[in-house]
Image (tube, rainbow, N blue to C red; front, side, top):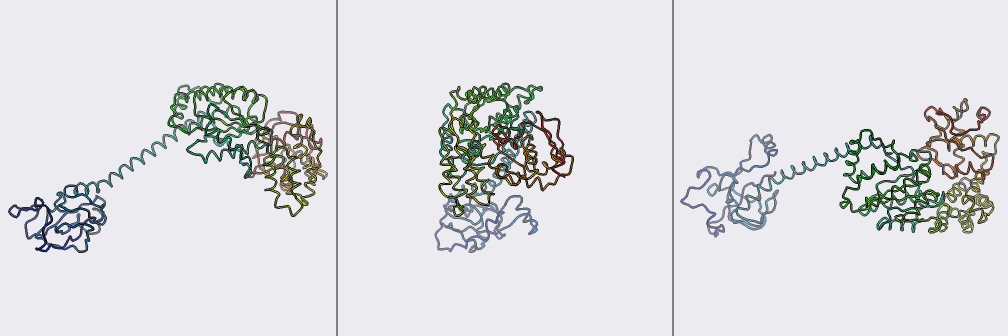
Length: 584
């Protein structure tokens, strides 16, 4: 601490009336405390230990000895530069008494707090000030130790939980947002449901493939994260057919793991479930038992301290498990949500029969129909204007956008595929005319196949790719696309090339495969180097509406992407293609 005092206050003139209370002045007859008269009067000013050591090292003395003199008290600020020494009127040699500041009030000393009290309170204030800093340091240290202790305990719990429950640590697989300014009414309505869900513990968003359900899920998750304090987003789980998020036995454990991150008491209770039953393994028990075993501990946890609703988003439930699995999951989940309270689920899916029956038969479900209740024509028109509006000088006009919007119906995937196709055309006007040439569908056609217009678009895109008109263009396309849609996980062009080499037993030029992928931006995309596609493309390529030359048999294969080796046989019969003629 800085030195409290230097030389103190000039000597008071004899004519000045004394201001100190009589009882504070030592009696002339009584021996004064302190050193004998004639000796040098001092006050020992003590700081904290570290400051003392600093002074020892710098000045060579264990403590500071400072001459002082007690003046008449003043009000206001004390100017230490004016202070002088007079040994004849020295007070006690230490600060153990209040006489130094007797009668003083409303003054300050540089480096110390302001003193507004007088007399005996001064001593207590000074001591409190000195030791208060140490107390705050000790309290801060205790808080830090508690923080690190709690964090360590949480890390240990999470480690045990991961080992026992085997969740998918990063289940987020999609990052496609709604285009700016689109689906606003739908997002507003779901947000209001999240804030005031009443007894509707489940929100079901349903629509056709390509109607933008996943984009809605991603945009909704962004909104909910911005509402921190009002709601808590525990998890966004995108079910993707053929990937780990479609694994039947990992959905419930992953949900529970992320709930445990939001409710610390639940994490410990969940670990206790496994420690009490050493034979229990999350992935080895049926879905019904998973829900019962892992959610029941939440019944006993008081969620009053978690005032905000906890939200879980499950996107694409129709791509998870079998229809029977989906039905079992939903029907058993409902009863647990009602008993727990405070946890709400958002589900997006197609209107598949098993899911629709489970949703429609429950009073705790609120439905959001993307086709009937939230028509997307205005949003799709806005999407076309944003993506194509800058090209009006090249022949794209408002009538073209209106015609494209009408042909898209309610499907954002149609609009997105059309825009990506037009980007690679030399003449935009000719490209639009190509897309609009497909025949109009009757109401009956759309009932029999609601994706009929989308399938026609896919066919038109493939028909107009120059590479597919070459001798080996279509066979190469079928091989490349066949491997992409039959693999269990997405992979890179490099891995795809290795797989083709393994099948053909001949060297394959990487650039040739890369060019094929680059020629298909309307139907393929890449993210972090991995090749992605929309599920509706795979369904089109195996449908009767797909032209025979492009049609691909539906099968599932598992590949080692490092070696290009296929693991096991295809799950369905596969028509072999002779590759040596293509790649030599």
